[in-house]
Structure formats: structure tokens, C-alpha cells
Amino acid sequence: MSRPRSIQSRMRRLVAIFCVFLAAVLAVTLALVFLYNSQYKKLLHNVTTASEFNQDFKENIDLKMYYYVIESRYSEGLPIQELQAAQALARDLLDTTSQKDSLRAITSVLDLCGNLEEKIYQIQQTQSYDSRQMQLENNIYVLTALIQEYMYNYLYCESVQLGRLQQQIAQQIGAELLVVVGLSVTLALLMVWYSLRLSRSVTRPIVELSRRAEDVIGGDLTVREPVQSETVEIQMLSEGMEQMIDRINAQIQEITQKQASLRRTELALLQAQIDPHFLYNTMDTIIWLIEADRPQAAVEMVSNLSDFFRHCLSKGEDVITLAEEERHVRSYLQIQHARYKDILDYEIQIDPALQNVTLPKLTLQPLVENALYHGIKCKRGKGHIRITSKTEDGDILLQIADDGAGMSPERLEALRRAMATGERVGFGLVTVHERLRLLFGSPYGLTLASQEGAGTTVTARIPAGEETT
Image 1 (cartoon, rainbow, N blue to C red):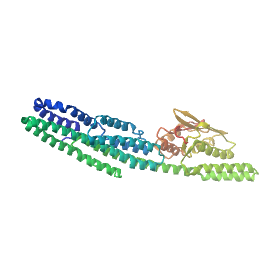
Image 2 (cartoon, rainbow, N blue to C red; image 1 turned 90 degrees about the vertical axis):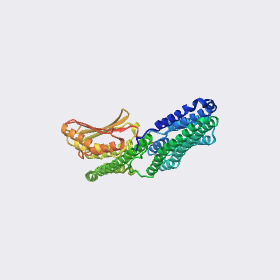
Image 3 (spheres, rainbow, N blue to C red; image 1 turned 60 degrees about the horizontal axis):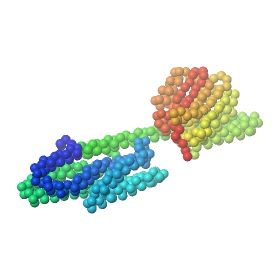
Image 4 (tube, rainbow, N blue to C red; image 1 turned 90 degrees about the horizontal axis):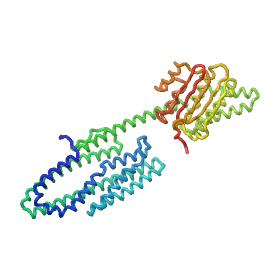
């Protein structure tokens, strides 16, 4: 197979051949050319302008709308700019088009663009994911296909009209100057042969690409050999499509793996939080309070225990507000304070303005539990746990600080390494860290600071933009 060449270069070759023959008859046909010059310029302007229509218009609009509908991180928003460019091109052509079929085609393009813009904004206003998907398939894909088809029909009609005009010129020259009949026939035959060859070399791979696109729309994401074409643009388009399919497959696998990891992490965390020893000890404390004739204290502890497990369930939601998480950790600390009031004091200072910020359920409680059991209880005398919040660089920092036993530099480094690699060590810190990163991304998660004998501070960074309405 010959080396692929661009459509522009092949068109330049066709024009060059045309010019060679035209030079031979230019002297005797100059007067006739002036008669057709106005019409020829207008048609040539239309063909040239129509040729500037983005051949990837449908693919670009469809892909950007697909990313917008599924709320992909690759989404660039609504493709209004591409649509406006197509409308501007169509209006320019409408002003210079007079041929009936061409006028009908370009008018249809303008009408369809207006309809497409309406359907795009309709999707923007639709909240249901299924409805948006249905509108994408039944409206957007159909309209972009029709726009592209009518633009190609327009280009074809104008090209045919241009060819007819050229044939009229050739026929007129032949009628007036018999001496150039042979050259004109030769030129016409050569152009027909080359045009058919060029048409076959373009339309055949385009048909194959269309079938490939239909297979992809139908769910066939198998990577195949690119379509072979003599045109470099079509060759690059086919190779790009296969590379895109390969990347989509890789992203699907990555998302599947992340979702599986997220489910495993969430399950492990939820199982870890319902600690039977915590329940046993709390129940023992309630029994002791009742036996010590302190019913009011026992009632408060039962109420706190009920609140604690109610927030653990959170109606099955995986992501809750910071206000709900604060109530959950407050219930936990009230229970623990009743048991360890001789060694435990606590303080919670979370900005009320942040109460609607969302975060994964059971984020703070495991960190507070670590502070109690591995910090406060490991030191002599009474300890203090302090929970605070602040904003920094557009994010929210939730800090759990204790003045307990702290960690040695070796232990601190081991925990940081485990958080970086996902190794399952360290009092549930790794689990909380992974959940934050899976939900919000790599910039977020936990950071540790500790000094042996002085205490430990755990900071959870979450985005400020994640709020419920």
C-alpha cells in the first residue's frame, strides 16, 4: 500500500493537474471565464468554507456530552463553543448560497444546531442520570449525526454545482474553439478518474470507521487493528479511536479496582468500629452505675450508647455531614469520659459554618479512639483530647490532638510509610486515610505529627467544596 497522504495534499495535486491543462486553453477561454467568474467564486467560497467544518464535529460533541452526563473528571463542560462555531459557519454559507438543494441543506444545519443547543441545555437542567443518558442517546447523538450528514450533503451539492459550472465552461469552450476539444476531454476524464479514486479512498475507510463507531456505541470495546487508508487524516482518526478505546478499557479496569478496594476498606472500617470489647465495657459500666444507685448517669450512658450506634448506621449512607460526624464522636467521648473521667478530658471546637461539609462516615471516631487507647491511657495522670477545625488553601483541616504518650520517631515513620503504601498496620489510621483518598483524591487524607512523651496530632484534610444542600 502506498504511503498515506493528507487530503489537502491530494487536493493540491488535483488542482495542480487542473491548472496544467487550464494553462493550455487560458488564452482562448479568458473571455468566457469572465462570464462565469462571479458564480464560480461564490461556489468556490461555499465549498472552501464548508470544507472548514470540523470533520470530528459529531465525535467531539458526543464525547464531551458523554463526559458531562457521566460527570467524568475529564469533562470540559458543555460543548457550546463547538456548536456556536458550526452555527457561525452555517450562517456564513447561508448568505452566499443560492442553489436550491444546497440552501435546503444549510438551512437544515442551522435548524438542527438550534435544536441541538436546546437539547444540550435540557440535559443541563435534568437531574436524573437515566433521563440524561436517554436524552444523550435519543437526542444528542441523533442530532449531531444529522448535522454532520446535512453539512456533507451541502458540500456535495455545492461541489456538484461547481463541477457542473466547470463542465459548462468546458462545453462552451469546446463549442467556440474546436481546437481545444481534445484537451478538454482529456482534462474531464482525468478529473473524473482522480475524483472517483479520491472518493473511494475517502469514503471506504469512513464507512469502516462508521461501522466501528456503531460497534463502540453498542458496547464493543475490543481493541482492533486501525482502518487502513490512503488518507493520513483518516488513518490518524482510526488510530486515535483505537487508542481511545484502549484507554477507556484501562480506565474501566482502574475504576473497577478502585471500587472494589473502596468496598473492602469500608467493610473493614465498619467492622473494626463495632468493637465488642467497647460494648461489653460500656454495658459493665451501666450495670455498675445502676448498682451504685446512680440511675441518671446510667440513663445518660445508655442514651449516648444509642446515639453512638445510630450514627454508626447513618441510614446506610457512606457519606455524612460534618455535623453528624461531630455528634457521633461526641457520643463516643461522653461514653468514654464516663468510664475514664479520672484520666480523660476532651474538647470539641468545630466551626458551625462547616456543619454541611461532607466526609466519609466514621472518620473522626477511629482517630479519637487511637488518641485515647494509644495516647492518653499510656501516660500517667490525666490527659486531654482536643478536636478542632480550620480552613487552609480552600480545604478543611480537622485535627485530633492529644497530650498522651506520643510515638517514637521510628514508630511515626513506620505509620507514615504504611499510609503511603497501604500496609495494614497502625490502629485503623491507614483505613481512614485510604477512604479519604479514594473519595476525594490523592491531595487529601491524613497527616501525622507526634513527639514521644508529648502527644500526637492527626490532621484530616478534606475539600471545602463537598457540601450538601
